[in-house]
Amino acid sequence: MLPVVSESYEAILRPPGINAAVAAQWLEAFLRDEMPRRRGVERAVIGLSGGVDSAVTAFLCARALGPENVHAFALPYATSSPASLSDAQLVVDALGIHFRTIEITAAVDGYLQFEPDADARRRGNVMARTRMLALFDQSAKLGGLPVGTGNKTERMLGYFTWHADDTPPLNPLGDLFKTQVWELARYLGVPRALVDKAPSADLEADQTDEGDLGISYAHADAILAQLLLGYSDEQLIQRGFPPGDVRLVRRRVDSTHWKRHLPTTAMLSNTAINEFYLRPVDF
Image (cartoon, rainbow, N blue to C red; front, side, top):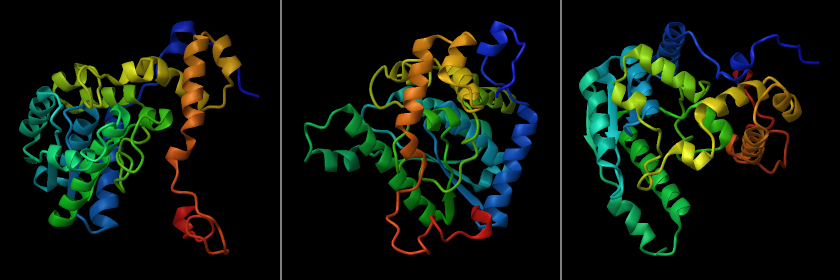
């Protein structure tokens, strides 16, 4: 039985906050522990999109590993917004990290020429997976490790390309809601242009995350935070959340559960990897 909470209506609908200073310290320690200490890898490789998530990731990596060990890549397609590149450059200028732009248009179109009827979703998935291919190859070249930039809200709502955005072996932002990423960005000093602009996957002109999702990040985070505590849809509605928003969030969470797991293995033995064969640290 979940406890009765005597909060105001406004407090209930407010997305969860964080102690940004503590979060930054913890995530920097996480990066140092997981990269040079555990894996013997000093260099972080990041896809710098011009958005707040990748900017925060770059700031954390620069603080944890030193800017000389951070290699950022802009990976634009022909339809990408020019502002994405200029915003990415603001991060590079602020941190003094390595930066390179690699156009992915020819690589993406090399495949899509055989699929001229591909819709926007398929085209976007090809772009996202091509970007990840480039980041993993650059990591092999540099002796680095790809560092992911996806936040908890995107992951819970399934708003990412499977085997693309979720592929890097390390993700410092994966347990932060989008609204918490914004808080952390302000604390770290991420350029205001990136913090204030509307989040976008930048796969089509005038595309925004919140337009695609059909709900604001603030409302989604407030619902997700309580949904993950175990409140039912009926309880959330009773607490003041709009029924349509609750149903939208619940539907997205339930229908994208598979995207948050490794591929399902058909078990034929009692040593199936990630099913039975686990090291103590995997539990």
